Amino acid sequence: MKYERFEQLPVWQAAIELARRVYALTGKREFRGQRSLRDQLERAAVSVSNNIAEGFERGTTQELLTFLYIARGSAGEVRSMLCLLEALPGFESLQSEISDLKLKAEGVSRQLRGWADSLQNSKITGQRYLNEKTRRADEQRKGREEFLKTLEQIRQGGMKPAG
Image (cartoon, rainbow, N blue to C red):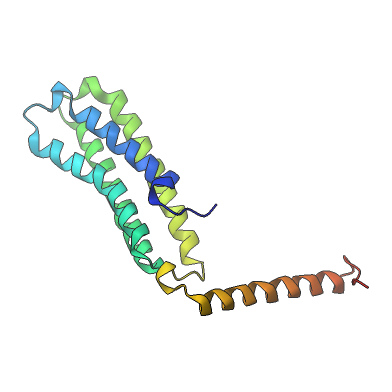
């Protein structure tokens, strides 16, 4: 499936859910008096979806990759801060929620890694570089690949030539 808007991306949707759940956590009474910790955790959580969106809108694969890695770093920061919360006194009653959020952040990170890996192995350079000439060249390349695949199947005896 080709995504036309970042809002359609499953990983962006998962990142938004992560941020929503982080805000639900930081709204609890245990965070009273922990303003800097709460603010940093919230900023890191929001950074994940924002960097996915910014990278998607940039128009080049290289810029998208850069922002995916920044988003992945922010997901790691969320996990790190959640690990700190597990070790701090006063957050014992939130252990289950914290553990669930760590898993959610890890899942987002895995999705970002998978997407980044697939982009690194791709010849796609991004929307910014698409024009009629590059589209035509891409269609010709795909046609050649399909033709060569058909020839190979004929050579191996898997297909009979038409005619």
